[in-house]
Length: 312
Image 1 (cartoon, helix red, strand yellow):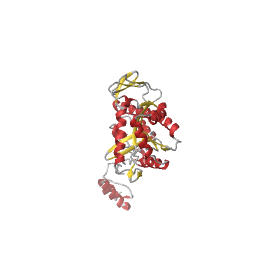
Image 2 (tube, rainbow, N blue to C red):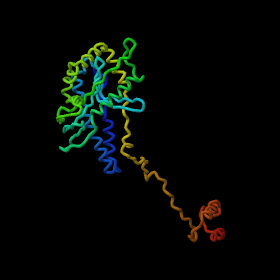
Image 3 (cartoon, helix red, strand yellow):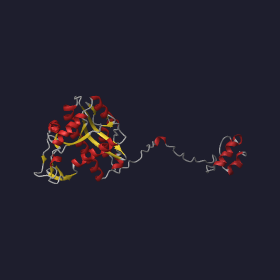
């Protein structure tokens, strides 16, 4: 049963594309953003192909719980797991999906290379990456952050199994000799998922037999499987990325545009002059004339002409 689907990354892609249009970006910032967009899109494509295969095989199977895109935090650390499959034997398959469009190569020392335009370049080991996911889950199950099923007063701790899921179209170049051949067997194509899990169940060896007997003794109900899966999903902490801070982008503050029509225009100074001699007069002289409207008949006269007004 599918307990959680993958988170939607459209908001991240929209924000990155918006930032890409900012005029103040340097060429290096543009390159970094474009690279991030390609990485997200490639990762989503790989996860989608793997999720389709997982859902087709186990999405409606009541003996399995399926979780996609789970991010957990514990004691200041975090981990991002692409896919989890949990069965009634409390076996958890921790699946890391990788697209590797042009394939991958692994040397005898377990070092990985991917290809771009036919040229190899070194990449981090997905095996070691998934080992860290398993270590994180082991610590989580030993903590008090999640309640595990209990039988006869004892906690039933799940067993963890690693799988690296590669795109069906990818070519996997494996070494003829390897220091850890068993680890390389955990790297499979998406279409080989069921075959690999069935092989894990069917393998017959003294240790495998003892493991199967131990697993039979701790088989749990479908409800218990679903309950454990839902408890894990409740611990999911989606990652919130500040993309502007990631790429060192500072956007200019939005300042309201000034409408010239709304600006207060300065009133040009009004020229005051004597109505008799037409000489310029001060404002105080003009006010004196206006205050004596009867004497000066509402007109403005200079100081000299004021003396002659009454004589005319």
